[in-house]
Amino acid sequence: MITEQDVYFHPPTSDHYTWAETNYFGFYSSEARVHVGAYVQAKPNLGVVMSSVSIFDGVSNTPHEVRYFDGSVHLPMPTGNLDDYELANGLAIRCTKPVMDYDIRFEGKVGVGFDVSYTGLMPPYDIHDPSMDPLAGVQQDGDTVSAHAYAGHWDQSGRVRGTLDLFGRRIAIDCVASMDHSWGLRDERSLNNFCWMNANFDDDTSIHCIWLVDPKRLDVYPALAHGYLREGDQVYGLREGDGRLIRNRYLHQFFDLRVVDVRGTEHRFTGTPMTANPWVPWPQMYLSHSFVRWDRAGTTGWGEVQDLCKEHFNDQSAA
Image (cartoon, rainbow, N blue to C red; front, side):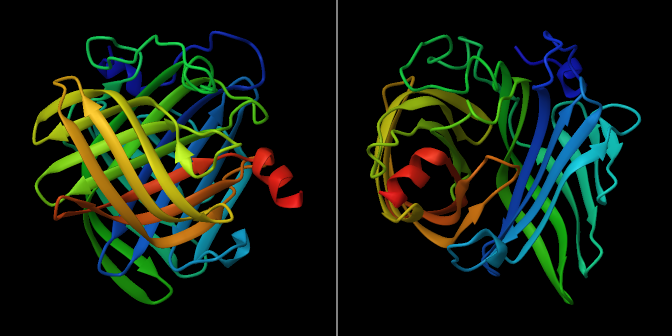
């Protein structure tokens, strides 16, 4: 169960240098076809922070072609705690209501910045709490995250409002998106073969999934690791799911997904990427990122897909 205290740094359960604590906030403009991600990974045993601020539009096959990327690997640990901090790269995050609401601000140095507020639409979804998640504690082959990097983890849907300044253009932000918070051992080599995604529909529903990825079958998501369905202020854990997808090499082109919630209700939805780009948030981590327009029985949705396979894909492309 997530409590208000979980907004703060957690005492490391190991003195290993890979112990990490993270925040991620995503938001977008469906009209401008642009997606923004603000990511922070603190490693308190080392006294350093890594941060990735990325802005995606269009389609590219190389990381340097994304619209904007600020990746800083060795920032000093901020004073204070995770409820209110500012990093040397210009990213500042302040929690205004514990584990629910945040102000997120970024002041880049080349005409890029944003000032948005995130308002949680549901309590944090604890993937390790069986009263929330029917897959909590289930040992699945190929799950590389739940017991280590996501030893502590919540996901949450929220509304994001504010403005994005992008090279002289001011873009209004008003969307429903996802954030997450994790803590645990985060070894760059062991964290692979999974997908984190969300779909937020016009009828005030959201579907959030963590999929398993099989590096030998990149045209499918073979199983669901964790996930939920939000209907207004009601949240239902997902008990199973699978999906098919079409790729251009590793980049996404189309999704056809199915999930079943704890009530036994099946939900099918398809997605077409509006953007598709490689994302390298830190060394050794190669992801395929897409901002997606979703469709569920005629209802439109928007959201993002982060798909991590790494060197398994590199091996395949070199074969």
